[in-house]
Amino acid sequence: MTNRTIGIDLAIRGDHVAQIYDDGQPVGRPIRFRHVPGSLDHFVAQAVANLSPGDNIQAIMEPTGMSWFPVAHRLADCGVSVARVKGKRVKALRRYLSEHAKTDLADAHVLAAIPGFGGPRLDTVHIPAPKNHALQRLTKQRGRFQDAIAASKRRLLDLVRWASPVLERILPDFGTCLSVAILQRWIDPEAVLKARKSTIARFIAQNASGNHPHTGPFVDALIDGLRQAAREARDLHRNHVDFAGLQAEIAIEIDVMKANMAARSELNRRIEALYAELQPVDVLRTIPGVGRHLAPVLFGLFHSAERFRSQRHFRGFCGLFPRRSDSGGAERPGQKITQGGNNRIKCALILAADTARKIDPDLAEVYWRMMTGKGHHHKQALCAVANRLVNRIYSVMRSGRPYVLRDHEGCEISVAQAKALIAQRYSVSESIRASRRANRLQTSA
Image 1 (cartoon, rainbow, N blue to C red):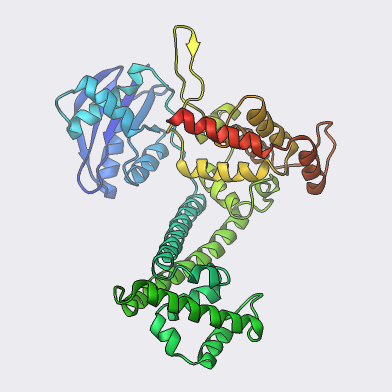
Image 2 (image 1 turned 90 degrees about the horizontal axis):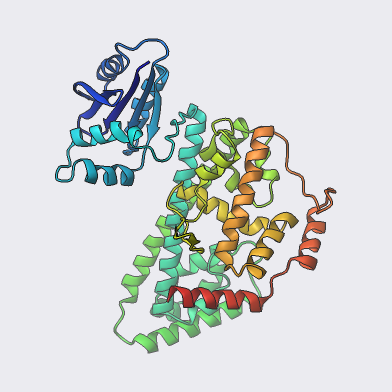
């Protein structure tokens, strides 16, 4: 029986380079191919040539952009097991095997040689179904828009705190439509002080929404506050700030933010429709902490429970475990979280864990025990909670049954009863939180 490995060094625009190894020995010359159907088909034919039934074949590559995707699914369709490895792992092995050369061919040889050096098992690449892959991309795109919106809000807040410090206290709420409209139109002190009260009142009435009144004492107090902020900003900066230019800068920033918010709303609509189609039962949202926003993110990253060998494999995929450091029989606790796993999964699980510990008594006990008994700080305790939460996600995805809140006797309880139980048994005092923060600062220093 032949054990064939194929190391593939991928390129974004140039030629891909592959090297075939049979039983640890290189076979033939390196194969160069491109991202065109004919070239891919020719490479796959060479990859599986001269093999007998029962022979093992595995292709190994780095996740270079999305170049891996068409190569991976072409090989997988022909029965080839495909694995991706981190660039750091390839770099470390290349330093040993090819210390003074970094070429495409050298990388192809290193990738093909990785299975012979032992180490962690190489997991086969999961090729998602088209709609599952689309959900993964859409949630990632929504995350980019959310980051852009948050960055715009931070910049606006920084500009207001610099140019007109009083204005932040006067605006009703910095994130509301009324506050954004005021910033886009009335940041220039001269414009505010020259405008009639009726003009500003009419503008407020046109842009007020939600719980903000359109007329009355609220509007009068807001106008007086805007004029007071304008006078103080003018006296503070005198002639050292071009407020007309600042007004144009803020208006452009708000236009960009609104465009991103509109795009995010459209993405939310598409994501929800696609998620409802892929998960009609929607068991993920029955888990405390996994709500309307995070469920499509997690499902788009996990795709299905069947792709994982076990619950332990599922947890390892998420990457929420610390580094291990021990020597001479002594283990050093408190290590940092490894850089393995997808960062989007980690962020989603930490957010979900912070909510779940306030609703699920079992998770609240884990958090309480870590904080009060083991001396961990908040983030360490959340990582422990997140790992327990991963077990719940795996269970409901595998069984298709919704999650049910239960007390320690196994009886089903409501959310209100669960919160009352947590408040009674698993509250962490502010003094403990403060001491954990102080210990963490001393340790880092």
